[in-house]
Structure formats: structure tokens, C-alpha cells
Image (cartoon, rainbow, N blue to C red):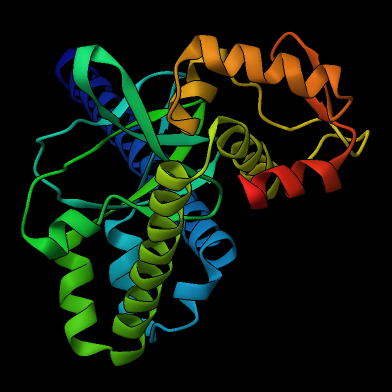
Length: 265
């Protein structure tokens, strides 16, 4: 009787452990399914232009290899000299692409807005990163391994053309900025930067305040000038009633005049 009772208790214990194990597996499976469903939703909605070019098998491959990471303000995403292995897409937040210059002074090359792709040019060029990227504010970024992208591009002409077009547009923006930063005077460069911030990130509910708050040093690095020159030029714009400056908040009150300054440098 005692032996039978012991076997009975052991059997019940085994059933309990087995039940807990099955529940744990189901919970993990459900969690993974939710995660996969969420990722697919993000890709389908936020990266709709690329998603629409994929067939069902390609969509499955992209979803299975896609992962999301959140970066804190000023956290590095990649550094100059690192090997390029990932296609990145900014889902939420702001990212700056920059290069360290002489004397530790940075030059902001480009500001990324949702939903833009970045970090892949170096891979196609067969080189390491020549710039660095960091979160300008808390940023959520989607990552896809470039070897996966390359494989899909070789099989999907529409996807290949998509990235050719993306690279071509980036090159056009880069060429325009190079000309503007080298040929325009200080006032023209700063005016152009303010308008670029407006076009990239928009305005707050008042319809005038830039939706991005930049330190004077960052604004200077974006405009290829010293911080002191950026401060003086902002002060001049303020005195001319072109903008209103309140700490890091900048309100554009005469956009037409700002565009004229930007155009004629």
C-alpha cells in the first residue's frame, strides 16, 4: 500500500511537471508569435515601400531576419571604421550621421528621419564605415543583415531598383549639401540648416517651432561653422525678426526671408 501510494505520488508529480513544461512551451511559442506578428506589422506599415516589392517567400525571409533595437540619446549605433553588415531603418526618433574632424570637431553629414534607410552604402562599396551614427534622441531602429538583402536583391529586380533609387537620392542630397556648405556664407549655411530641419522633422502644433531641439554646437556642426559663429548668426536672425530663440527651441516667424537668405547665401 505504501509502495503504491509512493508510485501514485510520483506519477502525479510527473504529470504536474509535464503540465508546467507544456504551459511554458506554449507561453514561449505565443510570445514568439506575438513578436513575429509585431515585427511583420512594423515592416508592412513603416517599410511599406519595400514590403510591397516582395513575394511571400521573401517577406518570410525578411521577417525572420529582422530585429529591432532601441538606442538612448547620444548612444552610438555604429562607429567610423567598423565593418558594414546591417541595413538600418529608422522607425522612430532621430539619428545623426557624422564624421570626426580635425581637433575633435564633428561634422554632421546627414540627419535621418523616420522612415529612412541608412548604413548600407559602405557594404555595397566593399568598405568599412567612413562615418559614424548616433541617436540624436531616443531612437528605434530596425536591422536586416546585408547578406540577406544582397541575396534578395540578386533575385528581385524591383528590390534592386528600389535601393539604386535610394542611393541615387542620397547622393543627390549629399552633392547639394557639399555645394551649399562650401559656397554659401555663414548666414546662408545656417538658414539652409534651419530650413532642412523644418523639412525633415516638421513643426510643433503652433506651426512655427521646429520639432527638433539642437544644441548650438550641433547646429554649428550641421552648418559647417564654429559654435560662436552659430550663436552670433542666430542672434542676428532673432534681431531681424526672422526667428525667435528660446533656449534650444527655435521658432521660424519669417520663412520667406529665411529662404531668401538660404538661396542667395
